[in-house]
Amino acid sequence: MRAIWTFALMTMRSLLRRRTIWGIVLVIILALLGIGQVPSFDVSGQSRFIIEFGLFGLEMGALLLAIGLASNIYPRDRENRTIQPLLAVPLSRIRYLLGRFLGAAIVSGAAMLVGCLGLMLVLTLNGFAVPAALLPATLLLLVEGWFLLSVVFFFSFWTSPPLNAPLTVMIFILSQMSVREFVGLVPGASWLMRTLRLLLPHMDVFHIKDPIAHGVDVPPVYFLLAALYGIAYSVFMLSVALAVFRERDLR
Image 1 (cartoon, rainbow, N blue to C red):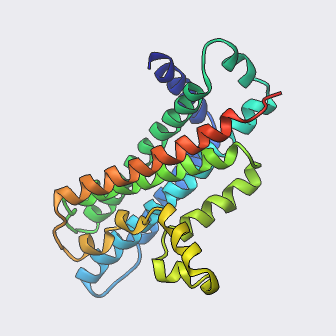
Image 2 (spheres, one colour):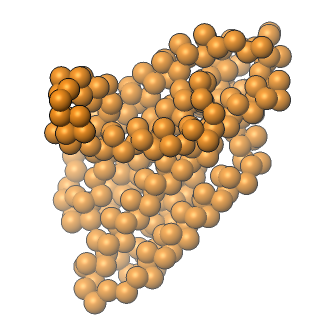
């Protein structure tokens, strides 16, 4: 575990030196500031607008962070030939994957926290109360981002970075669909589509912006179960990614 944590810290420092992370964080902050400047004659309506679009912006930020942070990690290590000495002695493949994932997850979490604080600041500056569930809602979006991060790692082991992004976005979109919408993509193979839909998470469980914006109380147990649901899917995707990684020839 110590080796994984040390490698995760190395990954985190490496990612923080890239301009990608800072560019995405800047885009999130500018988007939140822009949402706060949208005029509205309905005070309560403007509050709901800021919360709903602010959380939507954080969700898109989680997607961009997953792609921007992880899509180039393994391809760059392989291109620079740094992965072979890493795996020769100090790290096994599972430690390499977990270390890289944990480092990227920490950076993603810090960026999402900054975005949440920015949304709170926008609400406060506009004279609106900050919902108590805003931080837990952001944490659910972070868990969703971790799942997307595991998806990006999975794709990075057998495809190129330019193809990784659209594939991840496709998974993101398909995971938003209901069973009926998903089956409707190929009506002639409903049994197959239902089976495929069972393998994908229902990302709508992470999206509670509407209840929060309208002042509906969300039970604390919901946040716990939804977070465990997302973490379980992240572990599943990392397991699949590890299975693919173990079959890769690094020469």
